[in-house]
Length: 163
Picture 1 (cartoon, rainbow, N blue to C red):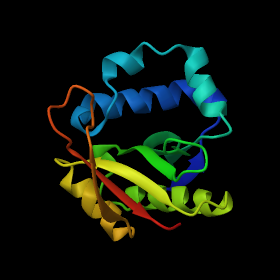
Picture 2: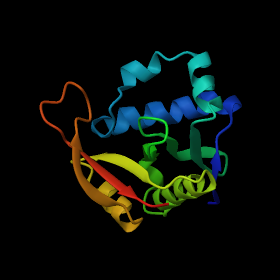
Picture 3: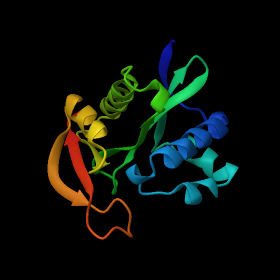
């Protein structure tokens, strides 16, 4: 199986939407958003996400089937770190290095843009994801965030690294 890591185009909005919805359905505890919320987005909203110059949506294309994704977008404010968001690899394709390749593509994107720092948030229960990020050079900043506003306590671990 050949895997290509590339930036998704606006015309792929349906495939990207379907991939995002699969991620939210299969690993809901990992994300601040929900399947219900994301499934209500319109074609225009999906296209806008993919055409936004401040964001880059990378996908793992496994012989024409999207098997993973990661988004590079501003963490919060302009001039702040670049964030790595929405990282997910289809469970059937895990263990093949796709996650690391997606992370490294986001890091390369950060270097291309002249960014000095990349940050991400990983939910406490996502131990395998945290190990992946550590293998890719991310370190725990000590900052904790609520993954969802409804969470009783912060369970999101903020990690960062230089690109």
